[in-house]
Image (cartoon, rainbow, N blue to C red; front, side, top):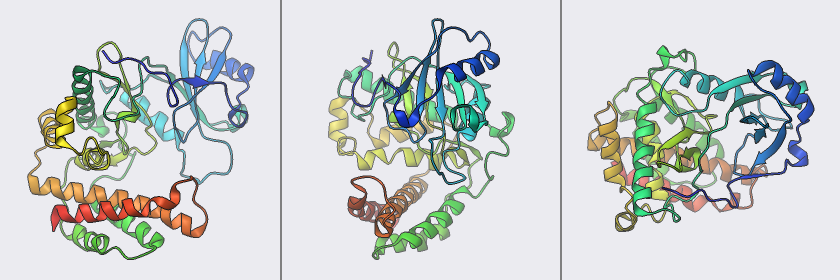
Length: 349
């Protein structure tokens, strides 16, 4: 079974001054709102990279996780912890692995920002796609469970669990192409012919309409907790990009790892590590899900996903141009944008 590795991106640390929470105020609130919550409260901050600060709450009897909006001035629709709480609460009615959702607090006066509290799930988060600390058996089992988990998510009818208003139904890929085309044009720094080709081609060659499903938006190995006892996915994390949409588009975006990661992009290395290669992984999804996907349609989905990520990266490059980008490597993304656009166009030209 996979080992739990503590390190730079795993585990907890003392709460930073910027993200301070008054434990006595929070403890009194939770005692009133979570059944059986009692005892002295200790708060630690998770190390891993989250845009919404996340904390481990420990009492003598139990552990919980608190997720909050970051302090400071935010865009109105950014860091929507209310949507995360809504989707996790709804999925508590299904067999999709998520924590039990306990309480959502909109009162910013309590700890400084809106937050919610959920169950603490034991396990480990794996930050490297080739799982270097795992065995061949570990790698295959984890990838198989990850595939089964996203297919399981895509089997849930959102209308049956109260998520009918969680997003717009239908025309997901068309709306996404339109949205990311506008964002790309607004941030364009130099012309990319393959990106122009995709912008012209995709609206005229959309994949067939799939049933509206809940889509995660950023499903990956780094956004799940792995059970260290059986290598199964114990919980899906980070729902802030979730909405209603096309499940196969969600899966194809997840599969971009097979093109971006230098190890996963090499079928021979996948074989040596006992990780399913891209074709095997797609076949797994088709077998695990209800969807039939032809080769040409899959190529369209991959072209769309590469176009979308290229537009996202170009947006960061545009912010560098405008002097509003954060991150030390934000100015080095243009080659990746170009690579994704070129590769996306080769899928469909």
